[in-house]
Image: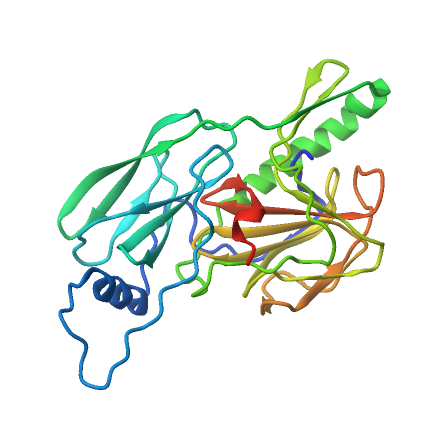
Length: 304
């Protein structure tokens, strides 16, 4: 599926939060957990139980995957960005404070770098991206399926510009658990990353997971968050975007109805819409994309 967004007459977007040039501020409870995990606090006060560690996605440092990168000793409030300046989600594991990094499907295997700024100054942290080969599907279809009309092309371009702004959403707080609930019942496809080639013309890799389901089946929020955008998209049909915090976003597409509005707070498991077949599809299903620091990553890595 190709990402698209709504035209100005059909979309609604919540008031802007911190954008990509903002830096994440780690909540104090997460900082405390990092200090305890690294032994920086030699002992907890009498009667104080050690806090549990957050639940993180499965680490798979490949294109379209997630890298869990330890930050080492820190001083004050750390701020971490990718090589292009996009802020990164921060959490903790048994090693201490970590960056939870989304790796774009377009990333090349090899060394990648993060920039860490804290009370000790600025330093670079390297991590490795391993290769991964995704499936290809070659299809012969009618040219009108592949080639957009001038009007549709203009609409898509407007929507793409809007969507680029939606993807930049960054709010400082995030849920304690980064594990997500599958948003509707059914078999999660293994189509993430698959590249379709129509009539010899390669298209962008599939940037989410599809869940075949009947029209009208309930779709829920995968985690706590804020609805940041809804609308009728050219490719994706009726769509809901949810901000789960620190650049972790869900996009739910092809809905038959939308039950939420921008600015609305939702809890994990709250109904946000229903499965449908709106947009450019051949049958009813839910397309679920997960974005992390603006990179589309495999939703399966976040499932419990």
